[in-house]
Image (cartoon, rainbow over all chains, first blue to last red; front, side):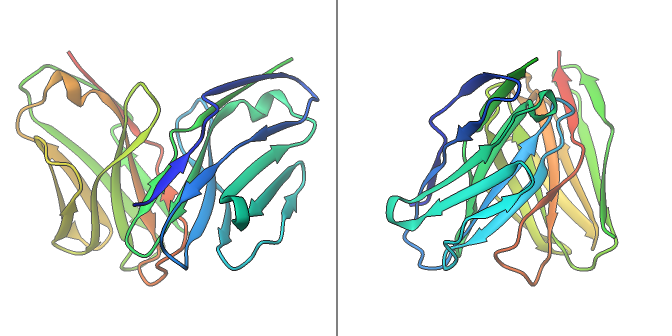
Length: 112
Length: 114
């Protein structure tokens, strides 16, 4: 079975704080991809990053960084120096051979 | 570049009325297409997906149906809406020949069944 768990339902931080969104997954597939999406209040999901199961290098894009650890089946997302515009629901997803599975999302609120 | 359109953006329909939501993709050929529903609890529920014209796979049996009359057009329908059909409906596309690639989502349709 394929499963994505985002245990943090809601997180509130004060602007400029760093925040990490957790994502833990389960799959039996040997090849898979992991994704993060952002859903701002407007509703449209915006693709942020794709990472394949053979590439455990961390990635940084501006204030965003992703930590993929296969040993713990985690793909965590960190926002550095958070801003109000980061307020959104963030979804982690996993694509295996047969299907894509989304986590239930983490709502991030950045307070000015 | 590719773009995905959905309409209408919002819709209020009475229980028992029919439904038709449309999704079109531009700038790509033979995409995989998906319909998701997002209820108030925020989770994404995959309803249907299609890998080609006339090919529809249903993930959840319910009173909704989907059709793909053209390569880049995906329609979600119902003959009789239920209150539980209220939610935010998202259409998405993915490159058809890239199994592991990301999906790109449309702006969504917010449906309220009264």
